[in-house]
Length: 466
Image (cartoon, rainbow, N blue to C red; front, side, top):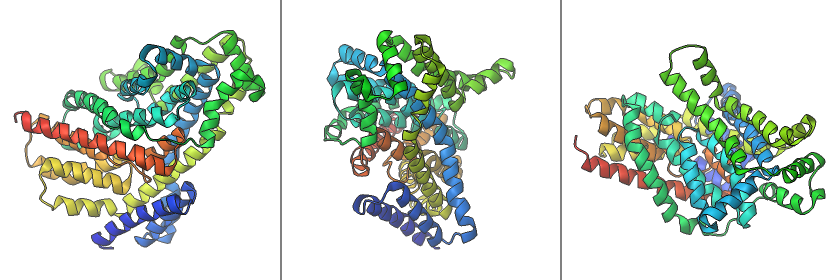
């Protein structure tokens, strides 16, 4: 296909997907697979490779997401049923007031998001979101979406997140320069995004039945123990008999974060040895979360006199609810990878690279268009760096301005997250909002944050001396 035909195919596939989901009410999992197969056939992918293209990319996405979502759901269920989420929610309301709780969660997300991958951070803080929804009677989206936007901002801009690291390597810019400029920029943008998007979050949100059941479970069971199954009821009774403290909840949320930070620092700073190997191993996201599951089981269950079988049943009951999140996210990954493999991104990149736009604008716009067309932030950043890297290398920019170009790419890489992005499905499904509500809130807020980041980068580009 010609580059123009590829671009039209990419745009058309997204339009068809939205039509199927929003207008025809087709389930997102089915719609994503149907459109992914259609794009593969239209762009000339051999039929013999079609199954591997869809199944392989879906498997790779699910292989990353499934373990994290499952382990995070186990941790979240134990925190919820023990009463820990309610304890933190009451504490936040008491300290900052109900009106400022979303901002408190945003600040928490900024700290957690620096060392932790986006998906992991969202999963780790969801119990607090559900606790706040239960405490205040407001939909989870009011708390969860601003929190997730904050994590995406950090994820797109700062090392050690993979997209930022890949761009830094491609442009030969030090991670220290990116952190020095990007950290204060991300902090300012986080606050401005929260303030400017408050009208968006003031709109009425729905809540899907599965998420509503999670939010209501602990509250209903406190009122009537018969509302929960046997193991869940025993878990809650243990928490009421020996109440969970805020310190215990903060500990189980902080442990995987600390382990991942330690693993990253050990891999970069320590000499090879047994201690380094242990720290790096413990810092692998699924290992850190697995260790935290065991800590939760002991701290919130076994230590309160519950039998191992009871705790095991409670943990296992968290898994069925994760299935739809994992499947839809996997299908989104398959659709995005088919778009990448079809050459849509390369066609767009070649067209824009020859446009004559100023470098900073080109870096932002190209990454944003690739993000919209292909989906994942990391893929868009790596593709843009590969296209523009040789051109940037010939300009002989200093480290400061190279870092600003990288941050401009990061800004484009976070914009307009929508149906071809796995992160869109994680956030919307875990917050219980519809696709339409997700597009009206999450997608718009990621665009606002991206534009604010680019405005900050452009200002520093004009002010900082070469």
